[in-house]
Each structure stands twice: as C-alpha cells, then as structure tokens.
Length: 431
Image: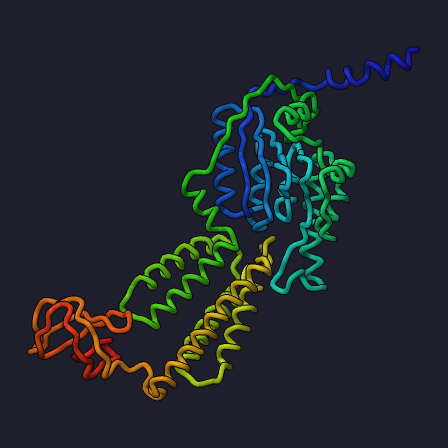
C-alpha cells in the first residue's frame, strides 16, 4: 500500500521541485520559404520583439524545403542563446521541414508536428550531387550528425533518429516521428499546441522549469516589406527564371537595337535576379556556363556552324542549370522539371529563329549581307534638333527597330526614305 501511494504521489513531488514558468503571451513567426539571410533577419527581429514585450514563448510555424548551412547555424545560435523558449510547429497539413528545416527543428525547445507533415532528408548537397565518397564527405556528414544529435540530446529527443536524417537522408511522417521520439507531440490547431506544452518540464540554458499555460494570446509577427521582397527573390526557382528571362531579353535587344523595351525589362530582371542570387549559394562555374550558352547562341547567328554552336550552347545551359545552386553551403537544388522545361523552351525558340533566318535569307537571296540595312526603306519617327556640318539628324523606324539617322535632305515626321549607307560603329544610318 505504501509503495502504491509513493508511485501515485511521486510525479507531483517531482513537479513541485521545479519553479513554474507562466505563459500568458506567445509571439508567432512563420517560415514558408527557403532558409536564407532574409529568414534570419526576420527571426532576429522577432526575438528582439519577444524580449522587449515580455513574451513567454516564441512559436515558429515551419514549412521549408531547405536552405543555407551558414544561415541555419545562425538560427540555431539564435534559438539556443534565447532566454525565451522556442516552439517549432511543422504545419499545416502537407508541410515539411526538409534539409535545413530539419536541422532547425532539432534545436527547438519543443517540437510539434501536424498530421500529414514530414521531417528529414538532411543530407547536404555538393556540386556533384551528394558529396563524393572520401574524407570530405565524412567530415561534412559527421559534423552535421554530431550537431543534430547534440541538439536532440539536449532537448531529450532521440539522437540516433536525427542522425539518420543526415546520414541516410531518412524522412519521417508525423506519426513515425512521434513513435521514434523525434518530436514532442502532434498538434493540428493552437489549442492542441497549448495542451502539449502545459505542465511540461522544460530546460532552458541549464535551468529546468514547469510550463504553466494561462490561456495565452498569440500575437503574429510578419516580415517587413524589405525582408518579404528578399525572401521572395531568394526562391531558387524564381531567381533562376528571372536570370534566364533577363538574359533572353538582353539577347533580343542586341538583335533589335533601339527599341529599349526588351533591354530595359531584361536589365530589371537581371537586377532582381541579382538580389536573389546574392543570398543564394551560387556556383560561379555553373553561372559561367549559363552565360557561355547565350554567347554561343548569339554566335550561331553570325557564324555558319550548321547547328554545332547551338548544340554546345544547349549542353552548356543544361549543365550550368543543374549545378548553379549546388555548393557545400547549401541544402537546396532546382527541380529537374523546371530546368529541362526552361531549357526546352529556349532551345525550341533558338531553333525556330534559326530556321526562320535561314528561310528569310533564302527568300531574299541576301545570305552574304543579311543584316545590312542598305537599300531598305525607313520611316522618320522623330526629327532631332540641330544641324551638324550640313547634316540633319533623325530617328527612323526600320523592321520594328529605332535607329539614328543622318541626311543632307530635310524630312518631316512620317516621311519614308531609303537607306544609302550605314555606320555600324556609331549605329547610324545615312538616308
């Protein structure tokens, strides 16, 4: 009877040994994209707000495909050094904490998952895919295994299971994660989050406390517009598409100078792509291959190679696209579907343009002087002020392009005249 009473009251004696940690306010942050410097800036601002306004918990709703190793470690340091405990909640249904997200989840004081979510696949990616066998692989893998296992042990979770996420890229569904003691509970709504943390013993910075939930209010904290923009642009797929689109539009501008529309939009796309690429793990060798591909496409127009330059450009574009974000500081890669669909679209366009140019040359029998404007008719679109040594200056339209032009004759806007000579160095026509 005494033994029965001892086991009945022992849990209450144990709980009584720890001081209460009342929770009245919870600050809610959300990660719904890759892990990048914008993510860290956002979380850092959120933690500062939590300190200033005396929040009891920081709740991070997590759904990420992965991200940068350096940023991941910065976030872990932020969580580990915080006096305010952190809940990581992988939600909603269909969400995942993959790669870098799994590493961040390992550092949470309390880790929860919603039904229908997953966690894992934390093996790092290198420029050749998975890191090659040998000392480099062992060093990188063992370092990350040690990190996640140390974090798991400090939080009272299963270190071996976390280690398998890095070593063998194992992924766990929510129920499997609970069964293998990777997480602290299942929660599908906020009330279930409160239930999971109430009366839980929590160790933070060496001190163990008992969490007491007092009907807390949740206060959402969102990214500012600058962080939001950088976070959007840091999406690898978007940065890649903007980069390709900008290069293609610049290519158009080189082929049809004077319009400025394609060139301006292309330059804007490249600037936006650059903002995203500056925080992504860019492989400069792969980026060089992509730039080389467009140079080869341009050369194909001016050099008769019977398609060899185009083929080389396509191979260069595919190779560069496959490895552009694969570095030893990344947990991300582009979808093969995105890469091959983009390359296919560009290749078809280049092939169709080449076929059209060949047909047009044959129709006009101007193979040796195809790009010459001499003999073609132009329309005066603008009369420029001033006279220069007897020459009158104009802007003229020719084949949808706008060129500078000079003439000894006086023309009015809308007049049609013939090109007598051209100066390719100054991009000027004589009419």
